[in-house]
Image (cartoon, rainbow, N blue to C red; front, top):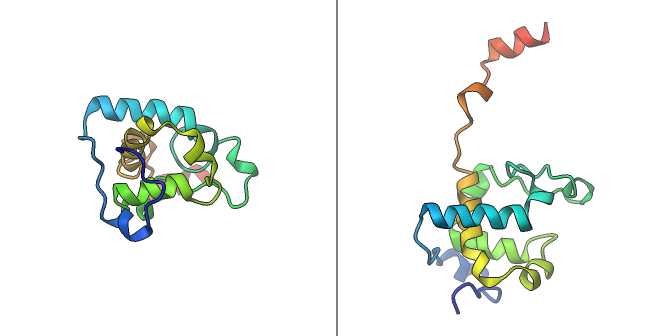
Length: 130
């Protein structure tokens, strides 16, 4: 059934695309599900800095990195369900209809460009230290 890939092999995950179309509705739902399932460990911005996750070893994955950006939807899906710290909890607790929108949202986290106001030049950082 759609959303039931917990038995996927690593190779099968590499060949799997998100069956849902990229849309505002799916992204909005993905954000809702992220806030429900993920934010306490991965943080509001996905950088692995959530309050609960700071006590974990290893720390939660930073979902904004280029390594995550290089994964396709099937790979994100598989890691979401079976990655370190997730198995077997996420497979057992996450509703199947929530999985693909959540994958879509997580993939967007690694594609975001920092807001202009949060980007500092080297000179600004030096000035701030002085």
